[in-house]
Image (tube, rainbow, N blue to C red; front, side, top):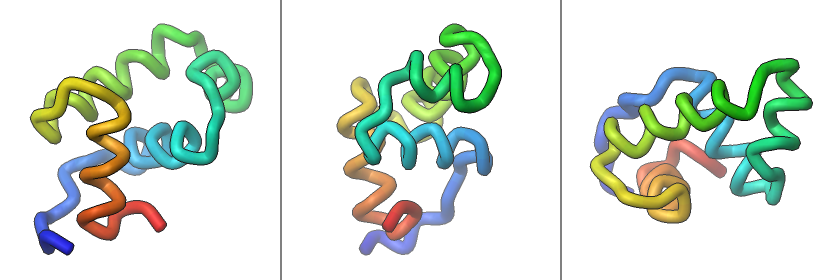
Length: 69
């Protein structure tokens, strides 16, 4: 664990968690009652905040830092 402070909003973290659970962006959007574009924007912010290029990398960083279980 890196002990890096979590820079993600609760919704951004929730998006990563749902993707780690195997849901698609479209499934997350339907679950939340928002557009796929909204989910995409949350993930775009996650990538920027964590300095990663892919969602897989973002999920790995979140697990490594203990933000996801």
